[in-house]
Amino acid sequence: MVAPVGTATDGQERGLGMTSLADDARADQSLTNVAIAGVLRVAPTSNPLRYVRFCLWMGPTLLILLILFFALLGHNIPPYSAALSADDIARHFREHTTSARIGMTGMMVSGVLYLVWGMGITKVMEAAERDNDLLSRLQLWGAGFTTLVLVFPPAFWLTAAFRPEADPAILMMLYDTGWIMFDMAFSLTMLQVTAFALCFLNDWRAEPLIPRPVCWFAIWVAVAFMGFCFLPFFRDGPFSRSGFFNYWVEFSLFFWAMLILSIFTLRALTRLQRDTPAPAPHG
Amino acid sequence: MVEAAPDRSRPVPGILTFIAADIANFILFFGYFMVERMAQPALFARSAALLDIRLGLLNTLLLITSGWQVTLAVEGARTGHMPKVRRHLLCAIAVGLCFGVVKGIEYATKIAQGLTPRTDAFFTFYYVFTGIHLLHYAIGIALLVATFVRARADRADPGFIDWTISCALFWHMVDLLWIFLFAMLYLQGAR
Image (cartoon, rainbow over the protein chains, first blue to last red):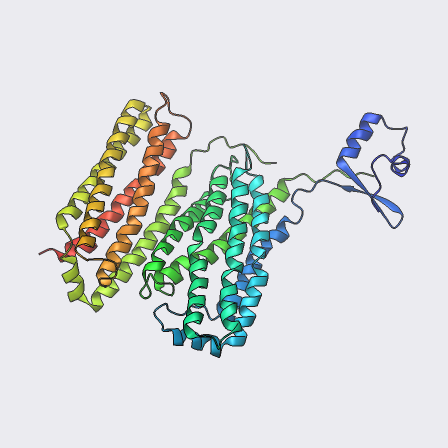
């Protein structure tokens, strides 16, 4: 049970009458009084970094889940070539129906972790922002929309796996739609990583929370994502969806960025926690 | 607690990370192109001969000239001579814009001749590589314009020199990549 501030219980516990009203007001602002099992415990209220580490760890967690669900169970290392016939694509869904169903379901369920990860990054970014919270908000919106990109394309692949007996041309269209949505929505992730980089490049600390090379790497990733613009023009070759540049270079950058940004934001969080003074004991 | 930075003037190593990553990406492009070229040298030589070397050379000269002007602008920024910065930046932007015009003419001519990214492997690489380079070029022009806007003040604001050096480094990278593209795409068709 949570005792309201300034109740008789609260006053008795802290010896009302021995402290001034001003002291009481200050104490009330900084403390939350929590009564557990009949014993009043006074806990420090302010821990702006609570849960942030958990959120940040959702990045690497999602990375592992994506490798399992999207890449391995979804048979997407690399995806089927856009040059294949409709019958070849249909054969994939007919041969791997169950693994595709498990993989795409898992991907749709776990995709939301990207938003949780983005929220963790937002909290670290807030520590580096000076004038306003614009960049951390943009980063969060970018992460939020990227979450949709992780959730919606597998719905198309799951639909195809759900009815593998359908017309091969329809299965191919579902497969293509999923991939085009997955690759061509890159601007949403571009927004996220660019806002991240600009924020930490403007960090005023002598030793920035995120090293500048990491910020420039993020900007490079954003620029490199523009290479996806070639995807609609090629069904085969290095710039097609399964080609060397499009898949192994551009597409893999999404995962490398997740990994590198996770490592360095976790380090930044460790530093923030170290630099934050521990709340003084009360009660 | 965190401490304020006494000196924040260190953006140059940062942008070098970007430049190194970008150049590594282009090295991959070039390597892939060469491997493909070895597989079908006759086709690549035949297609490369369809490119207009004069336009490629003109664009090389334009970018080198623009890069030279940017270097002079950096010199002006270092000495705090803002009119010199503005003058040379304006020249760099004007000459740089000519590159885009020439490239547009070249693309239009090639497409009118029926040479598109789907024509053959060589033209796929031609359009993709020069297209990605054009994106970098557009970013570079935008950075130069932003630098010019910042240079309108009578006195350089803190960080202006580092900003200018960073933009200049980026612009030189655009220049350098074009020199490689020119040699790789245009000159192999020269007779």
